Length: 119
Image (tube, rainbow, N blue to C red):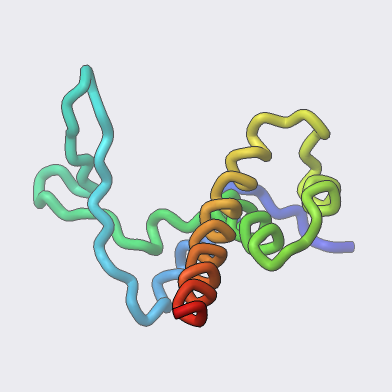
């Protein structure tokens, strides 16, 4: 009933849509080789960098959705169920760690406000 969509086609369409982002800025891509940082260019000859839209994929959307759900307080076990991660998945804890960083920052802001009321 629905057409068969390949991951490659889907990611290509996402990149096309992402070019419409108002701030489709350049993103310098850096990798390490033998301990040295190397700039990876989209076009080596012209030394042009990648844009934000070049980095958007279905996996980016998945990571964003998982992190957003965790940041908004959805319980881990429910997010894990939605995303299809196993109970002891090490990969899932990368998302939890990102969400925990946001929680820590927000908690610090609240504690600073509480301290200022004591004075």
